[in-house]
Amino acid sequence: MQASEVRRATAAALSAASALGLTAEGATVLHDSNKVTLRLLPCDVLARVAPAARQVAQFEVDLARRLVASGCPVAALDPRVEPRVHERDGFVITLWTYYAPAAPHEVPPADFAATLERLHAGMRTLDVPAPHFTERVACARELLADRDRTPALADADRELLGDTLRSTGRVIAGRGGAEQLLHGEPHPGNVLTTEEGLLFVDLETCCRGPVEFDLAHAPEEVGEHYPGVDRELLRACRLLVLAIITTWRWDRDDRLPDGHRLGTRWLERIRAALGPDGLGIATGS
Image 1 (cartoon, rainbow, N blue to C red):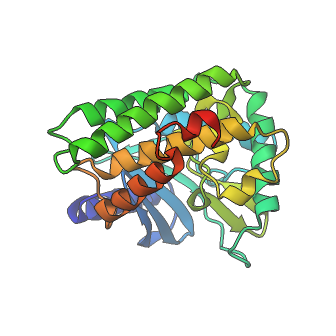
Image 2: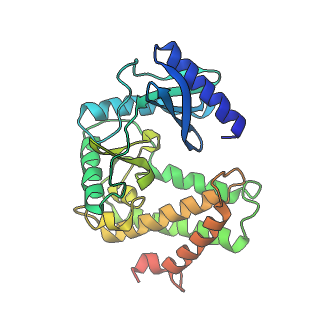
């Protein structure tokens, strides 16, 4: 968010929390992207605030409640207030339990894999409408096709990303693996190390697909500890995810610091993964 939007979002969160009977006198920004995550003090509540026009907060609240009730390793809503979406000043606000970080901050790959496996097991029991992961691919392809939104992307790089999205998509479809509800982006930034163990956050990215798509967001060592992984499928998913996030870095509205530098580095990783003939992902070479 822009700095002015962060200030407005913070004021909205403090106002909403106070109206609910919580003592909210100040806030610390923990994360700022398409939404802002705040620690409200002294009530010690975690607030997630997003513009009302671009929110899926109700989906996230409903899913979190069901997963917590099933014993899944996800962050819970704050029990002191009604578990719902609150609206104020053009923002939607959800209030969550704040978990103090626990040491060590580095998550052992085996623990990460076991916790993700528990989450997947719980998700398999839920009948929840969610987008298919291929919708994310389609959005990336639309972005590549829109030169006004990606003006700094060179033609050769645009072609590389488009070809990679298509080729990896064919490989994934051809593997015919089982699909289920997924977290969607279970990277280390979406895992909390708490006194209660590892907990996943940010459920708005949930989608349907093979578990290998989720594993593609985790450190490579995690996949080595997850049982029953299709290695070729995971390899294709890793390259697909890399192509998607690289495409995002060239969006003129992308606000990730140093985004173009990252995008350039990731383009080279894609070229190296595909190999000189461009067929590395299909042949396993």
